[in-house]
Picture (cartoon, rainbow, N blue to C red):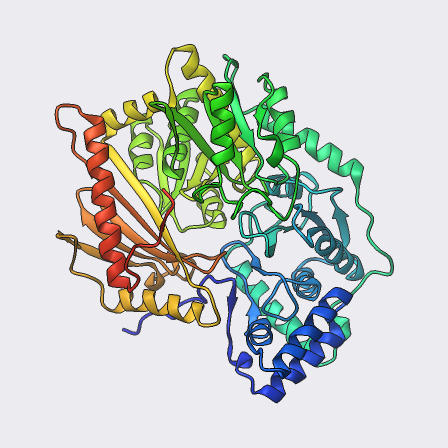
Length: 589
């Protein structure tokens, strides 16, 4: 039997046949783009690339036209600049035109943006295309967190939502996230329809059909009243997740130069917590992210200032949001130093806490296939259902919707994404921060800490140790090199790794159902150990995930954890060498 046709891999920009251009064709494509580009700054930048190309500096122009930005794990995301392979005003207008072509003529589309360079203009462009199509745009006033946009779609009865953000990506990037009427990120089969519409709009626009990208007769004004009402309703919903209880906790906080601060402060106040001890130099929105190399709470060094602030105030924990506040990072004190919790540790702590606070066997928790299987054991202990799904919150929420007989309590992915309840159908760093604060305050009232709870879970369910690593694949050939590494693993998987036999290879690209296919290879190593390899859908990275379950010797948790960390390091190094990049990439766990 022939193998199923693989889907388009998740990638920020994927070269296609039309991108293989000779010099004359490339210059002609640049000229057509310049004629269509509504951005004077973009045209100037493109002129400079063309001039450089003619003087022998080819890479800039070639990269700008090396294919088109395509739908990945979280919509469109790429470095900013002119050309179809970059994020810019023309790409945003075309993407919006493709989206509205799939919506009813009387549809409402809510549009929001973060504080990145270009985000406000991109949002105005999206709203202008919605208006030009005859549909109703609601442009949120000012920069907002991504979970507020997801919440707004259902709250306003919109047919779709657009959030202009590149989340935790480098400052050079931007993006375009799409939500449909259910308030969740667009997923199959609608994303395939949108991908086809994107190609059709671009092809027709390139060949001289301006009507395919409609434009309103006047700029769309932001709606401060709707934005204020949404913010108030959102804060009320978040506060409602917490049962009455102790609120005495000292928490340090950083927004990492993003847009989470204001609503986080409001939500904590509404829930009865004292003001957060903020990292002042990182709490105002600034799309250049001046104090961090990468604005991602997973990245080494990103939380150094949070750790310093937490130590200064004697905090119980430190919490961090990424720039659009849909992810949560946590640091905890341990033995005179501070340690960053992994996404798996945070996810299992939050899930266990929420399950302890509620009742009923009709509850559901969801994890991704590259997240810790400890969640399954925790769910079984509480007598509730746990489901594993593909990576990405479009899949997490789809798994929740697929079980309507169950109440969705919590979902997570190890990359610091957590969803609490059904009101916001996407990852929500602000809601997760509130639940974490509630857990910390309750433990503190008992004279205990987050580490104590982790120890309790390990004694009950076994010492699960997990870690992810990533390697970046930059340059024009980066995508090809990354794809080649995964293809080699897929065609010739190892029989053993670091002395452990590979008992099974699960290739999710060959799943029988199209909606279940994804570019992920999982290696089952037995005794609860596994590894997985997956290209990132938002950055030029190859991510490798691993988990081991260590036996306890005379109840020595720390010895088991040390053994697990050593075993993970050996496994990561072995698989990295097999994939062709010795050194194992950068650890994120």
